[in-house]
Length: 122
Image 1: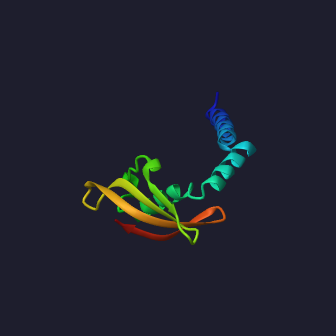
Image 2: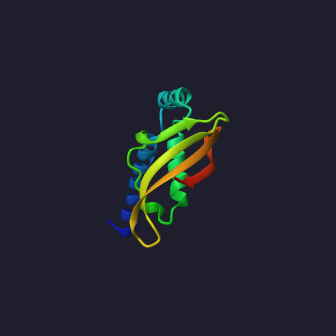
Image 3: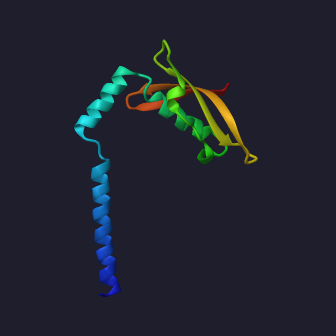
């Protein structure tokens, strides 16, 4: 078999794998409805993930961040609709030492997107 035919065959095989992965990753209508019901039942449910991403973005070494169990994070729905989250993690500092960290993150959900309103050490 020529190199061109092998490359063509490989390209088609990879295309098939990508299509299968896309189908496997796409949530069903039932899964989407269940996720929406969970968000409606607990308006703070997405805040922990949003805060995790905002905290990582603020770190010197985002890829070194280890957050442990999010279920232990304190969450509070504030009167204005924003969510206050107390997060604990470990991450490397500028010198490469891994240190524990604690931050208070305040986020607000608008539509399907979370916005950072405040982030500070505590």
